[in-house]
Length: 426
Image (cartoon, rainbow, N blue to C red; front, top):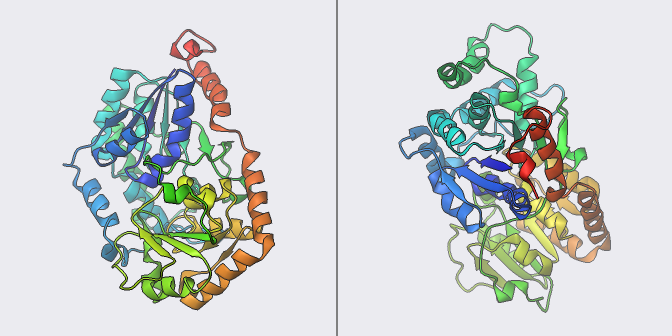
C-alpha cells in the first residue's frame, strides 16, 4: 500500500504524523510526506521521504510563515480559533478566520493533484488544515482521511456553520463558496462534507478531551516524536537534584506568556531557581541572563522525548504535543496556557486527571509559578495522577494497530477486495 501524508508547514503539525508513517514503513508499505519546502528538511530528518510542494511564490503562505516566526507580530494576533466547544460559544468570527487558513494552499492544489496522479497512492492522510489534499484525493479517486494533531476545531466549526440559522451576513453565507469554488471547479467536482472532515478522522487524544461533535473518530495512541537530534549526554543523565524543564513551543502564542502576563522572563527563572532544582529552559529568542543562577541551563532546543525521562516536572503552554509527550513519560505538569487553539480544554483535561496544575497567563507571576512548582515537586498525588494519565493513553490503539483498519478501508474503496497495492502488504 502506498500512503501519502500531507502536512501544514509547522513542526507541531509534521511531528504527530511521523509515528504512524514509521509504523507503515515498518510493515513494508510505501510512504511519502508532502509538505511546503520550508519543512521538507525537517521531514527528511525523521527518516521519511519528503516531497516539497508549494512554491515561495505563494505570497499568502509565505507571509503566514514569516508572521508566525515573529513574536512582535503574534502580540497583536486575535485568538479567534481558541475554541472551548461550549454550546452557546460564538463561532462566526472563528469560522471566517478558519476559512482564511484553509485557503492558504489553494494555489498549490494542482501540484497535489499531479502528485496523486503520478505516484498513485492508495490512501491520502492529511492535516486538518490541508483540505486541498482531500480535494486532490477526490479528484483522482483516492480514499483519504484526516490525521488530527490536536483538538478538532475544524469539525466543531464546520458543524456550527452547516447547521446555522438563516442569516443576512453575506460574508458568512458566501464563505464556503469563496473557499471551495476555486478548488472544485477546475476538476468538475461537487462540494462534499468529506472535503472538510475527511472520509475518516484519526484522533490521537483521549476521548474525554474531545469537544462535542457528531464525528466518528478513529482513536490512536499518541506516540511522541519531537525531531531528530543527536543524544545529549547531560539531558539523559539523571541530575543530582530534581530537573524541571520549561518550554513554550517552537512557534505560536505559547511564547507570549511573559508579554501577556506582564512578568519578566528573567525574574521568573531567577525565582524558580530559588528552589532546589535544576531548571532547563528551552525558550528561543531570549536575551542572555547576566550572572545566571548556577542551577539554570538555557538552551535553544532539546527533544522532549530525550529529556523528559530525567525530569520531575515540565512547565509548558498546554500545547498538545508537549502535554501528550509528558503524559507518555509520566511527568507532572505546570500549564501556563496562552490560548490559540485547544489550550483551554487541554489544561482542563490535565487538571481533571490530577497530573498537573494550571496557571492562566493573566494570573501568572514568578511567585505563583514558584508556589505551584513547589507543590508539584513535593505532593505525591501529582505523580500518581501522571501515572493515571499514562494508563489512559495506553488504552488507545498504537499506530501499528491502526494499519489493518486503514488497509481494510482502502480495499473496500477499491471494490470489496479488488486487486491493488493495498493487497501487497506483508
